[in-house]
Picture 1 (cartoon, rainbow, N blue to C red):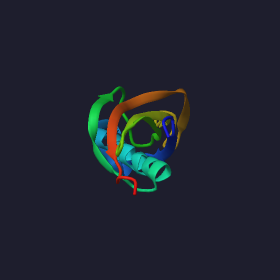
Picture 2 (tube, rainbow, N blue to C red; picture 1 turned 135 degrees about the vertical axis):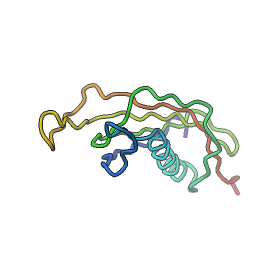
Picture 3 (cartoon, helix red, strand yellow; picture 1 turned 120 degrees about the vertical axis):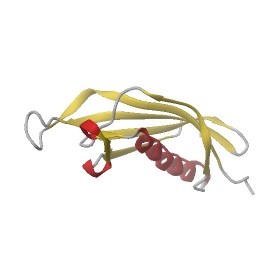
Picture 4 (cartoon, helix red, strand yellow; picture 1 turned 45 degrees about the vertical axis):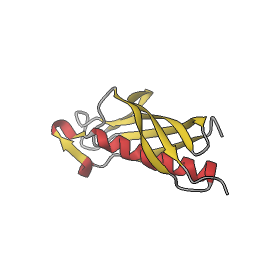
Length: 126
């Protein structure tokens, strides 16, 4: 179980832009972390689990509409009912409107946008 990882990728639609410059709010990445945590709990415990909270959240770089993001979630500690999970959100592709209305580029290396450590809880084993 420790070391189990899930990866989600998503295109960030322009409808999610919340601030000037097509900036997406930080809560967008946190919602993706929740989705990844749900899949992680299903895979490790056969239950969707519940998110108990974050012990750390760091915003390293902006996420913009038109980005493609990759979210990873990895179990780093297992308690009786709790699981500590490390999260990362990387921007893997970014729109380049200066080159044209639909231009975009792959970022190599990907850009770390958000990292976090969280705790999820699952029902006690029968």
